[in-house]
Image (cartoon, rainbow, N blue to C red; front, side, top):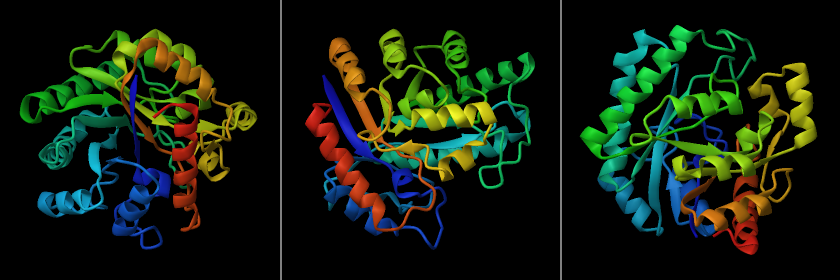
Length: 295
């Protein structure tokens, strides 16, 4: 087993490239390296330097390597393809030049993260689902053929691929030679799934993990009351692995059974945390994962 542990700007509350109240990019790089991580995700395009030579120098100076970048888009929207293609290529070219191997894609939210307003149906009709699958294959082929990047799809709360049955339908209808999963065990547990069982059943499609936990009782309240995901994050439903109800030791047992060889990126959804908190959480999480033998 070889779990390459990394960090993500998301764990610092970075969701846009230019939020003046968030941790500056150079401080993030310092803090993630000081917490003991060797790998990072790019985060929102434009948060870290987009000049490849500059970014390479900044990473090398801290002993960091890039694993992936990604973006979120309403994949069923055929009118968005031209803009999506431009974003995918721009971001993909940057990370490929820096040695990353994965490109991460997430379906768009059906609720507004800030206001909670639902502006799309919670489930797609068959035509829209078919379009989502077609778009995913187009992105996968674009990334692989032009840049040598492997597409990893991230099931996510308040999107059209979030529950176990939806994820399994997605896997059944996508080409395993072109498309894998970024398996976020926190999001999976958030929607009532069993990350341990799912990993055991589908590990051949999972080269990349997002690591975090959730508060199980709060998840049940959120589901029963249909609380939007943005509000759930502000309520603190996502938490660090050592504190939540995800069975990390059981999950580790599965990783050992299957001899997992891939990435485990700590990516804790946080809403505007106090600026001094993320590095403390990152360090605690790194120590916890090391202590339980995950990497």
